[in-house]
Length: 285
Picture 1 (cartoon, rainbow, N blue to C red):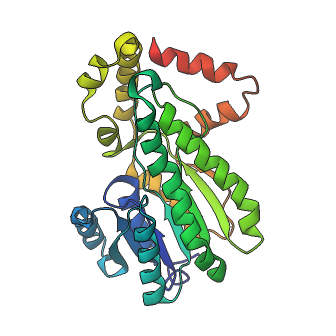
Picture 2: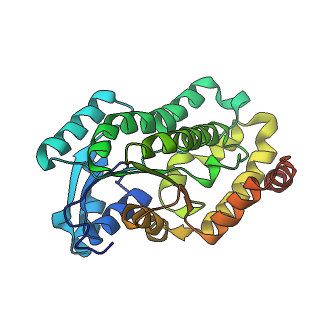
């Protein structure tokens, strides 16, 4: 679709204060869409506003508050968008938070908190917006991760949440299609953004607290830091999301890089799990 085709389409994107969400908001506006860029703390909106202004699309980006773990916040934001613009054509579930650790050390509360943001937040936004997407025969796009397909060491809670999102969306997709809503999941690999820093704000303290798992955790961290040294940019990761927003019939599952396609492909053809276990074992030794 060209920019003119998208001129009156309204897309709501969660988690736009940085990283993939910010890049997607600007790219969608450049594609001609009206972007409702949401975030939990609108005091962090200045980088997005600056990027939108530099791209010449500030007039097509509106910042609203939406906290995905607060149902009242979600309902209020969605109602405001529909009241103001009369429609909602697409939703990009992007908000999320990383969590590095292991169950024996971190405990169950960390698992619950990770699922609350990464899974239940997606479910809540989806529930609130589906009636409006039905009305517009729109798009529901969710940023998951290669970690939603491949379980990764010291990412038990995060991968559990992303696996849950993938299962939820894969199950929802044929149902939503019967009422005209297209469902897509986007699977990034390593992306250069603030996501890693938010997932592990204090690496030395994390390793110190890991007890018998400290050597494996240090090996994992060393390997991960190297992989993020060659990570794709947030702009590159946003490109497939905009493709899913604008192409006539996007695929259900889309990766954001050749590396991500290869990694996910290994899992999807690994019937007994041995290939992935052999691969990820090298990350902790």
